[in-house]
Image 1 (cartoon, one colour):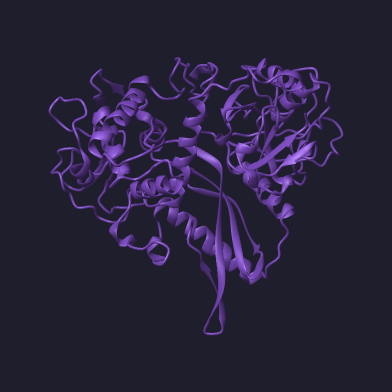
Image 2 (cartoon, each protein chain N blue to C red):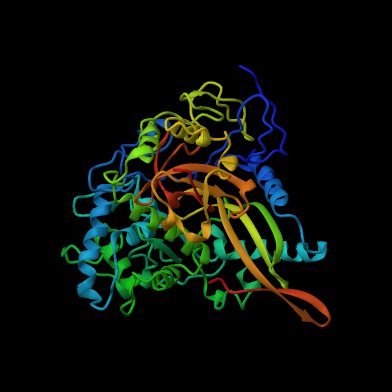
Amino acid sequence: MRRVRRRLGRWGCIGVVVLLSAVCCAAPVSNAISAYVALQSAANGDGGAVVDGGTAAGIPPRMLAAYKKAVQQVGKQVPRCRGMRWPILAGIAKVESNHAIGRAVSAGGDIRPKIYGVLLNGSGAGGNTTVFPDTDNGRFDGTASGERAVGPFQFLPSTWEGVGQDAGSDGTADPHNADDAALGAAIYLCGDGRDLSQRSQLKAAIFQYNRSSEYVVNVLSWIDQYAAAAKSPDLKDVSGTVRTVIDAALSQRGVPYSWGGGNASGPSYGICCSPSGKSGTATKGFDCSGLTTYAYAKAGIRLPRTAAAQAGVGRRIPASSGTSALEPGDLVFYAYAPGRDSTIYHVGIYVGGGQMVNAPRPGTVVRLDPVDAMSGYAGGARLL
Amino acid sequence: MLPPKGEGTAGDQAIQKALEAAWPADLSVSDERQLLAAGRALLRADATGTGRGKWPEVFPGSNRGLAPAFSTARFRIQAAIARRDGRPDRAVVHLVWAGTDRGGTYTDGRITDLYFTRTSQEGASVWVPQPRT
């Protein structure tokens, strides 16, 4: 197998590639979600969970049940609240505690060991340099010398005093209980009666939870991903060449990602190496543009081999139109500077319902992901 | 070629070069330097809470304390450029960065645009951050 030395100076698609195809592809290192297909087990390093019909992969079922229960109950507590749905609570819990993954959750919803955030005593832990005076004498956070955020939704004890409710009728309102905590979070987000179906109000609610614009962006991204993953893409109205392309890509689910791998004939051994030294030479599989090349070849369409070059084919769907402008079969692009196609780093195939089939990055496999799983949405290309 | 995500610092230089090649410099060196310093500081302050006190107009009430949304330890700006934004008195700092949220999920390739307006203070031009929408 040949080693190809890559000089940092050739980006995206130049098309000058002499020997082997340029590679591409990336995905957030975080776990992406797929509701439609069983992901491989954590053994392949991806940390994916097996789909259990009706749940979104990656959320432990008992936690998801808590979020759904809170949605049912919050109407009694904040009657004017509109638009609360479980992906909102899931988005918050994801960034606050990763759904308490790794801990035991009892049938009654009690989480052990208890989840404690950094001690906010101004010592600089976690970047916090302001003293939060102790308010609960350790009742919730186990310490009387300061405050810690607690539970799956990381409430400060002082905040919990204001919103805590007993969701499970066990007589206590416990921020370490999944049901109580989810209800508390829902109450907090609902405020005086927000309409959370309005994006601006949803943003305001999340900002109140943690006053950071990047926090809001992060949570919204997870909310959107969970909302997409909750639906299975419906292919019954997709036919003809579009169906051929999508079926071809979906038929490769589970095939490993390989840096430089894949071509019109199928999976292939890739090349060495990515900037950090990841090699595809030992892996028979696809990188992102290899997968799209293969899928379109099945419909008789010959794509250029790199992601950035593929953006130059067909009718460009601009990023400014949003992901709702995508149709099944479209190529979907992601760039470090959306609008400048030479910074495109990833491509997938849209299948509908807010999801795409793609080969994300080294260490993953061909799979379905929400189109919101990647940063830098750079629009699409319609070839069919 | 552009690195996939998860490449760590080894991929950052490639991203920086890609940004510079795709979006050529169009500001004076001193403007760009001022903007980049401000943009990096503002992003770090927003994401980790560190240094908010220096920007009271952007982060009112920062003395009240904050549990950081992203940990300081794994926060990293991978690439950044400062460019004009339409008019000569408007600029944007485009940052690509990595961070770990409180739940422990690390994601790189995050993209943020911060906008600035040029004003004149005592004869010197100063770039003032615009509120995030």
